[in-house]
Image 1 (tube, helix red, strand yellow):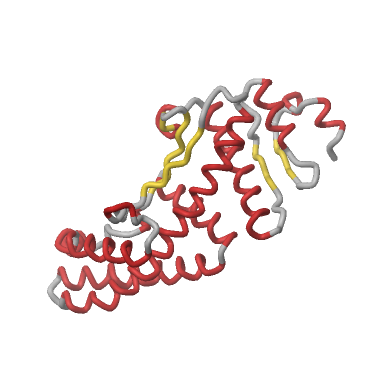
Image 2 (cartoon, rainbow, N blue to C red):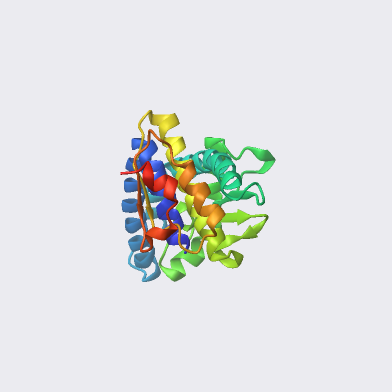
Length: 235
């Protein structure tokens, strides 16, 4: 579900950027306060003008979150595309599609902070009556989504179990690669029963893709799924 995909984006970004984590924490607090104020306005005990302060805070941190997500997902997509191609034997093409709740500014200035702020502010005004009626904020990165595509098909809807597990493995290899590139630190990889529902060829490719200088942990309920050569060189 989108909630879990946003959590994935947040965890990945937080490992790469401490400022992202702080912006996310502030955004969450502001969102709670703004939702409370929307309900008070709906009940007639507060005025719309009181939203100005919270809107400004929501826009400031929300835009940072949005732009960082887009930046990191673009890098992850390139790395995951390569990893998936290797795991699938170049028979399929994977892509990550970030779908922000805030529309891209016109004229292609999607990465421009000022333009994104203005679009965010415009959408808040456009959705204001609906938000007051519902008592919740429906505009912002807390409504973003992330699509996992293989050969232009949404794996969340049309993917086989084998394709979905290959996507998951490609994502983890891509994420580890990005962390090394940006932080210089090598993370520990954990694959929880990733080999089940994969054919022999894809299992072997996943095992052979593990780096000798990266600690990788596999869990499995069937040791026979592990390649003999891999087992002989593992501890």
